[in-house]
Length: 200
Image (tube, rainbow, N blue to C red; front, side, top):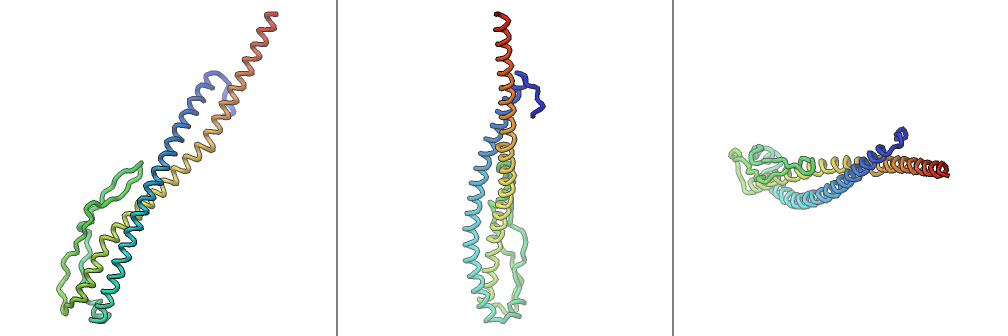
């Protein structure tokens, strides 16, 4: 900005540019705060889901131990499982400050019927049901993790832009405007002295 000719028009243009930069910085700063608050909310929800998932996973592990004691490892491996399909895993995208967040308002995965077992047992059925219960919970956690990753990426980009405005463009514009105004003030003082001397 050192090559700008010090004129009244240049000073006005720089003043307008400075106001625009300040407005842009204010917007980015507010966006930064909103992204951070939403990120923390998504993280708290993920942590709650993680706790619930771990509790259900413990129950599934207990059911698996009971099934192994009843049928043996080979018997459990051969026991027919529920087919895993995406039916019921309806995911929608919402736009939040330019970030596409994933939501699943109707996430109710119902395990499709499994083939009939040759030697069914209550232990094996309980094990199969316990692990089927983990599927929608894992899907919810995956959605939250994706949202967290996207929010972090957008927050970092917004942070970089805000810092560029705050620490580079705004100081440069302010310094250039001050230099032009100082030069114009000196020119006005010299003109006033010339007029005064000419009048004498």
